[in-house]
Image 1 (cartoon, one colour):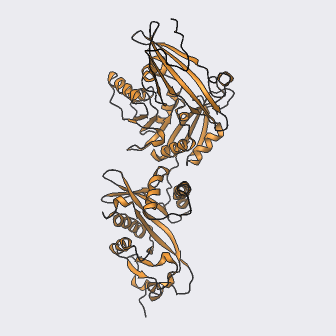
Image 2: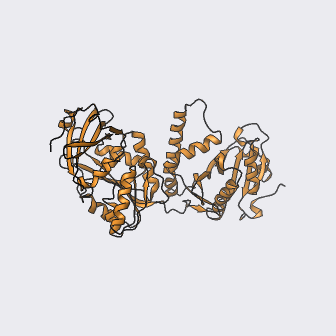
Length: 494
């Protein structure tokens, strides 16, 4: 077959309209994926299956496409869900599952950097170098954070990335010297006898940002007649070995190994064409000081993850806690640093047998919506200023600071007035008194925060008002003693 002469910058012909799209893998790209080898077994199949079977539990296929791996794993009796951004590929995957008499898989049309699924997984894997398609660095980091959040403690993550010096990749000399030119990829005869021709051209290579931009072109022919043409963006970011390991560690993963070509060999750029990073989410601390996930009648109180950043930001904004001198970008960066510290501190404090300080997410059981934050916080201040402390001989009004266990809560504006704050705070109080054997808990607010004072009263706290103007955050204090305390330990005024 002789391809008609076509320019690269105009439509294929007067009667053929070129369809341009972002990185979608829909339309002709989805149609030709399996016939051009997209469903062919590869070395990754056995490697990933061994990971799943070594640590049994649900698995998630990121960029599952038409089901090359996912359907084979389902046929083997494994529990695997999938996500992809291409609705056309997901539909093909469903059709193939039906044809193979497999149970319909749980498939979700989502981008990995926006991952938000109803369950967690023992294994998450991203084959075929799909991770490199996320070209914005912050979005790539967000994807790793969301993988972390969707893994069970101790779960395994596999991320693959192509070595940039491989043939056809960004730093291949043939690619560098042909920027702007269409290069042939595949000619594929379809089951109906028509021909699909695929071409690619790199349009730019940014060695500083490690990103190249490219376009993939699909042309459908009947005999020598061009019937349809589609072009979409095919941009990629490339990574190096130690960079990939550092990104995973920054997202909280441990035991990072970079293997080559889905083998047990450590990656070597001179002999391997794909980096295979295998990492684990740490097990939660087994220390008795760790605070487990708590459940109440309506709520779940769990650890925060980095994917909760937007909700944390909104909760703090609703509470009016922000520095007006900071720009919105600086405020978000500040929140991110705080959340990273919080997430890392859960196990760090428990391993040191320190109190389980830090905010937790308050999640509504009925729909999984995060409605606010609650937790124990260190609270150091001049509590001797409060009449309660002097009357009960707890400390003198000497201006010196003393430590207390502080109780914190903050509800998102949309979920206030439904009793969630009291219910969540009571769960923390019960755990603190009954399991951690904390002697006393305090909560602080200002004179104008009637809602917080109402929560304190419902918790049974003694309400104390600071006769001093400073510190401003110690204006109103709720004090709650552990009911285990003997009255002799809490002396009445003499």
